[in-house]
Image 1: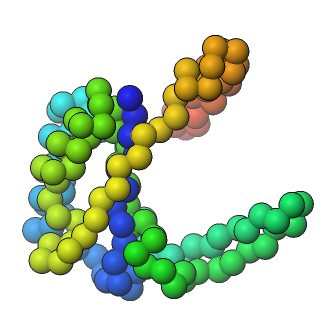
Image 2 (image 1 turned 90 degrees about the vertical axis):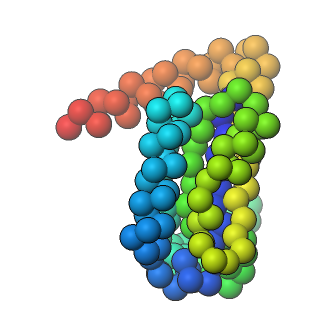
Length: 144
């Protein structure tokens, strides 16, 4: 099972305040544990929403909304993508994580990623084929 583990933003992360060296080191050590355990698939921090945009869909109309976005508690500061056996295992890993914002309250959300089989056998078969084509193309780009 794959899970996206989402670090919620706070006013400092939205202001572009970077973690201190100690926090970076602690998170790096934790990420190393995830790698050694075969759990970590991806991990990234995100720039503040002032450097982002949203695209709102209404039928065929598209409206671009430039950041920053007002509701900080609904924004994402970073994420991991993990491969684990269950939600319970993902929760146990999150409990071991350093606090993303030391000395403050913070929140990490865990969401299961849909897999091809979740959509039934026919769709799963087509999804697998398309996914393999996409992975092949991505790996080709990484070799550049």
